[in-house]
Every structure is written in C-alpha cells, then in structure tokens.
Amino acid sequence: MTGNTISRRRFIGSMLVAGTAPLILPSRLLGNGAPSRTLNLACIGIGGQGRGVTRTFGNIERVNIVALCDIDMESERAREVLSRFPDAKRYYDFRRMLDEMEDEIDAVSIVTPDHSHFPIAMHAMAMGKDVFCEKPLANTFHEAELMMAAAEKYGVVTQMGNQGHSGSNYHQFRAYDEAGVFEGVNKIISFMSHGRRWHPWGDVDGFPEGEPVPEGVRWDLWHTTAEERPFSRRLHPGNWRGWYRYGMGALGDWAPHIFDTAHRFLELGLPTKVDPVHIRRHNAYIFPLETTLKFDFPARGDKPPVELYWYDGQENVPEPPPEFEDPRLGNAGSFMLGGRYTFIRGSHGSALRVIPNEVRREVHDSLPEFETGSSHYENFVLAALGEETARSPFDVAAPLNQVLNLGVIAQELNESLTFDPVEKSFVDNDRANELLDGPPPRKGWEEYYRL
Image (spheres, rainbow, N blue to C red):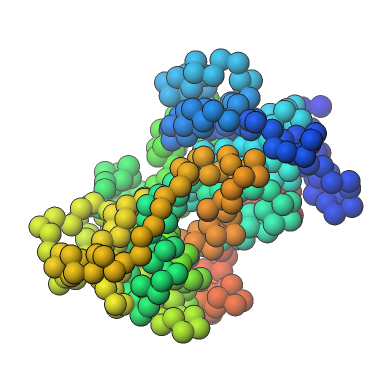
C-alpha cells in the first residue's frame, strides 16, 4: 500500500464508524484521569509563517514537538526548524504522518497555504487530534461550515491562529461589552494598506504556465484538494495568497486580526448584503490592487444594524471620522462609530482607544478595567490539556471566516450580492452560490467533504 492509500482508508473508516465505535481518547487524558504534563504536537507547514509558529510552540515548556511536515524541506526557513527540533520525525505527506504516528500525536498545528487548511484539519479532527489552524480558516464558505461541524462532531479542541484574539483587545473588548460600553455601535471602518505580493504583477490572464520544480519540493502534495497545476514561483513560496483558488487575499490575511473581536462580541453573524464599493484592477484570477467592501449586518435583538467597511490597497485608505486628531492613520486598524464613544484600534491585539483625546481623558477612569491572560499559543496548549477554554475555537472562527468568504466572492465577481443568512445562500445568483462551495475537489480527495 502507498502512504496515500493507508491515509485514505483510515480517514474514511473513522468517518463511517463515528458514533458507533468505542470512544478513543487522546493519550493525554488516559491514565490517572489528569492531563499529562506535555502535549505531543505535530507541526504541518514549517516554512514561511510556519517557522515562527513552530518555534513559538516549541518554546512552550509543556509542548513536545514530535513531528514536522512540509512539502518543501529544502527552504531556508524549513531547514532552520529542522535543525531546531532534530529529534522530531519528518514527513512530506501529512496523511502518512498521521497514519504512522497516530498514537504519538495529541494535536497538530496547520500553517500551510489557505486552500490546504481544510483537508488537513478534517483529517486530524476525524482522528481525534486537537487542531491549531492559521487564519483564514478555510478557502470557501462550505469548507468553513464543515470544519465547524467536524470540531463539534469529534469533540476536539480547536483554535484559529488570529493571535490577537488572546491579546489586550480581546480581554478589553469582552469587559467593555459586558459593561454595555458598545451600546448603539452601528458602523465599523476597517483598513489595511500594506503592499501585497501580487500588486506588481499587473494584468494576469491565466494561471502560470509553469517552471521546473525545485529540488526537494513535493509539488503534487502542495495542491491537496485543489486542481493540480504546473509549478510556478508565482504560487510557491508565499505567492499563492494572491490567487482566488489558493488564498483569500488581503481580506483573509488581515481582517481576522482587525475586526475579529467586533464580529464576536457585537454578535454580527452573517451579513445580508456585500457590496464592492470600489475595485481597482479587477481580475478573474488574482485579487484586486485595491478593494473597498461594504457588509450590511442586520439588527440582532436590541442591537442596531451595522455597516462594516473594509479597505485594502496601498493608496486606498478611508476618510477618518472627525474625532480622529492624529496626523497619520497608520497601516492597519479600525474605527467603531455610532455608540456612546468613538473608538480606534490597530490590528492583532492592539487595545481600543477612545477618540478624541479630550474625551478619552474625561472617561478613562469610568471605563472597565481588564486583565490579560495566556498567549494565543499557550491558550491552545492549555485548552488541549484541559486547563483553559480556547478563545478562538472553530465555532467562533468559522462564522467570521464565512463573512470573509462572502467578501472574497464579491471581489471575484465584482458584483453587489444579497445573502440569506438563514438559508446560507445568495439570492438569485447561481454563480455566487457555486463559489460558496468552490471548485470540485481533486480526484482522490473527495472524502474530506463527506462529513
């Protein structure tokens, strides 16, 4: 049998017998009933962003890195990680790794291109492994829905890698929300003006024609569920984020760090309309040079409707509200308007700040105090060990991700879209509804969609 066949057999078997087989608990929960001291972690994706994530987990005392997996072991960043954890077993194929080390792995980290998050997470969850998955969670709306359902079905601990969701902003936002500070908020303006890898490419009329595959790269494994295409440096390393089929552009990359707490604590849910207010250099293959999106969220109980704006592009920045007095806007952040106070914050864990400065000084002592806690990585580890609750589990992260999926569809089609949050479908737009699912999976990878 090939490694692929073994993996496929075990994955399907775990799906078919779910609910009828004896309960299999992770090794950390066996024995005397108390969590073991360490979490055995397998890191999938160790180059690029994966280098930092793997090193961070490896620096946590209660984590034991037992396996490293990447389709490109020869990159400089991957070699650095390999030398840092010489005793960890090495794999190119995550399926073979999970099969051969099933009893040695408690959890996995997934830091791979956006399009491959879904099958890796589904495979790991079906085997009872806890999952830390970088943002964005999934490349399509339907994949995010399945990941959320799988996390519930298999009872595993999950965490999306929007690291600021454990920072000051998270704890502050929760405290302010509980105290009713955000009552009346009806408008959010979010922005990110950093340059993106695809910005210099100009007009693109198709996928790259291909180049020789670098030594050490397992190009067939890079695709996972996506249609296989020739190798190109405009796909790997890192450039995949510029293509609709493989990534989620600036929106998927940065919005999980910028309006994640607003989405969660204001209970925004799914929008009823997504409007591409401004698209510069629209293209059927890669993301625009500039995008302004408007999301309309309906009223939620006594909470008013909310208009959420997203700006990306180096020269596409919002007009700040009159309360903003600083001479420079910054490269990323958001404003919250319409409530008792006007707030600004940066990205990731940046705290909220009342504006203008005069009002902030007046109300500072009346606003709730808050305490911070474990880092996002430590929070996942402690949650997996049964000692904390994950702060960005899939049932929180997936609905946020689905908002972003809808925004990406509006970017790709460059059309104003009406969405039914109850039916979870677009109104009178067949092409947009097709994109909720995305292209059919590559032959041999269909089982990941059969929850």
